[in-house]
Length: 258
Image: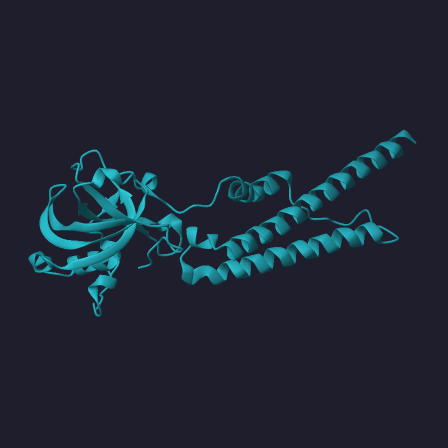
């Protein structure tokens, strides 16, 4: 008789554990779905992925919410059915697997969403990256509409950098500087991403301005000026001599997409 009672208690314990795991799984699935919906509605997706892959987030949100709803229905159905087959296989996820699934949701919830900035560059910024040169681009239209990536591509495809002397530019980016820069120098920088922030690359144009020190790192600015070829970090490159610098709000889409 005692053995029967022991087995019954053990079964009740396992059943309670399975129900708890089912609830945690359901909440995680619904939480992930709502997290994707939140990022879609707030526009925070632009801080993580290339805009052309945004549709994948809609698919993910739909799948997570659907799976969470199915899991919730299963819990409700089991609770309200009149008879139970206690020998069936719940096939629930282990606590370890559930903890791993919870990590991205916890991190995404606790850490504010923000785009990469000067701190993420850490000296790894390019004036002549393969990313900029890799795409053959036909440059048309007003050069004053070109962004940082457009200008780098134009420089990389040119056999005569001196041809850019006197060319006007109007670009947007965040301020980046290193200790080796002159007091009148900084870089107007942007991050490019092909797929997501995991493959991000920092690029920038060197800027010369008498009051460059007035603009702290990470400040978003719009710069109008002209190029003159000169020396920067030991390379001969076009330097953007600024005529005016205006502090602006961070763009809705802070990244550039090759």
